Image: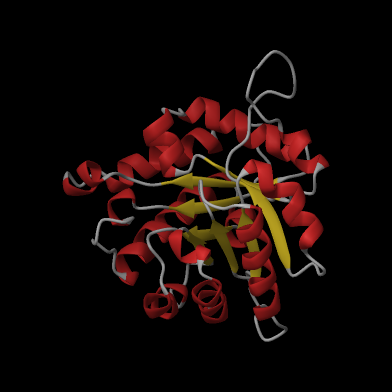
Amino acid sequence: MRQSFVIGNWKMNGSLDLTSELLQAIENGIDDKIASEVAVCTPFVYIAGASSLLDSNRIKIGAQTVSEYSDGAYTGEISAKMLADIGCKLVLVGHSERRTLFGETNDALVAKVVAAQLSGLIPVYCVGETHADYESGSTFDVIENQVGALLNCEDIDLNNLILAYEPVWAIGTGLTASPEEAQRVHAYIRELVEKKDREAAQKLRILYGGSVKPDNATALFGQEDIDGGLIGGASLDADTFISICQKA
């Protein structure tokens, strides 16, 4: 049985004070009654401090992106081994905002997954369709293209990987994907992976990242192929985030 996983993505939010207060509040609320794994992806500058603040192993610290390069003349980039060096355990790769706002391509993102795995990080590879894709009925085509890029790389370890489905059209727009809609896409993603490695597909955790809130978390997490959530704005409120973790 796959253990659920809830990951908070703080995006470009936070301060030293907020990092300390929010992490301590979350840690105090994550008790043994919560069966899900829990992680928080802070901005780069707070990762080391966040790691040092935590007294237990109940919360993993992650990063929001990573360079595909190991070192060299790449001003402003952060390598996977640097992240591992300061206590990072996982990293988001291909978040919808990285794809849409910063033009990150499948090829670059697959290289980032490889780099993360080589440095001992767990990559969380994000896929999802825009509103235009959704309206045109291209959801499965987009997903197949994005997941296929990953599966076509022989250097990827499917046993050290998490996938996350983000329907871009349902993030901060007021629109929502029903639990059944989300399940159909999650099941399709697992089917794609099964064609490559059936055993790995059954163990693979696929998270949902489409505006998860306490009032829809139970229905979403109750779907067969939804193994937890990638939580955006709701992860900046300790009580809300803990409530989502409890429902997972």
